[in-house]
Image 1: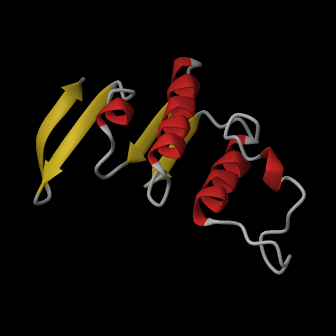
Image 2: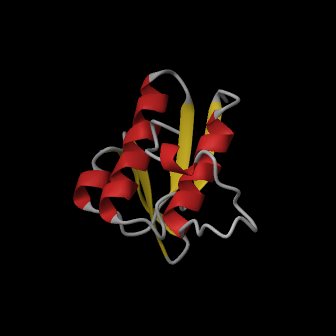
Length: 105
């Protein structure tokens, strides 16, 4: 939770607590929950959608650290900022369902 900067949500219930949790917090809580088991493969579908640019950057930066630690990280992402995009090692760009680029950045 510290890595995703959501420690303030630690004592909240996701449903029925009366204390609202925003979409960004909920998304980061779900990612944190999956990281608890220390998986070797991390697959993320739109991990940054609904997040502000700084939160999106932090999520992808954390995934970069996980990859540098030897994990395989695969993510789909639409319209990242240039700073966030440059955190990826490899990319596959698609247009109309066809690969137009696949390789290192």
